[in-house]
Length: 211
Image (cartoon, rainbow, N blue to C red):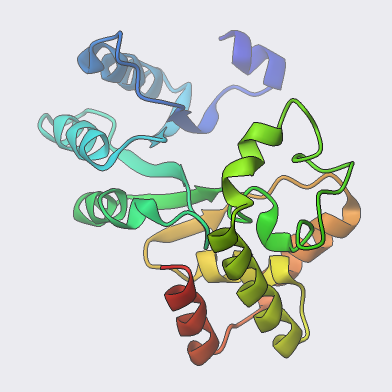
């Protein structure tokens, strides 16, 4: 209720459980979801950062009894630098008819190419508070993927960010890629990715180099 007041709305279109809570029975969490939906305060529900088995458990539990709020999507990290969700999460989503919203589709900023020549002072990796968030994607393997993305972008006459976002967008089951823009220029680049159609041969090459 406090959130609705602060947002100035009478309902939330999509309410996602941000992370699995090991300290609370899942039945209790899902009962709260059901109440939020039946009360009209929430239209649709989803999960976020759940593993494959957690996603399947929640979906199966909610489908077991008519009237429960069926989860419609999950939000997980997915990019050319993070494809682990393809092993278990995406098959679970497919089995239960759920969509995928990809966060950090730009590989925590690495796929924009900004780190190819070093660490910019105004970047997340250059900020002591966020450096550990980006560090896992600054190794040699990630560099090869970022280089391949940049090469594809040069050949297509677009930015590396556009290629990275379009690749995620086109993966099976993906509903949308989340973007966090700080500037108008970044927003324009992100929106431009919607018009980009990556040729099949280039898309396959990126899929193989990032496997």
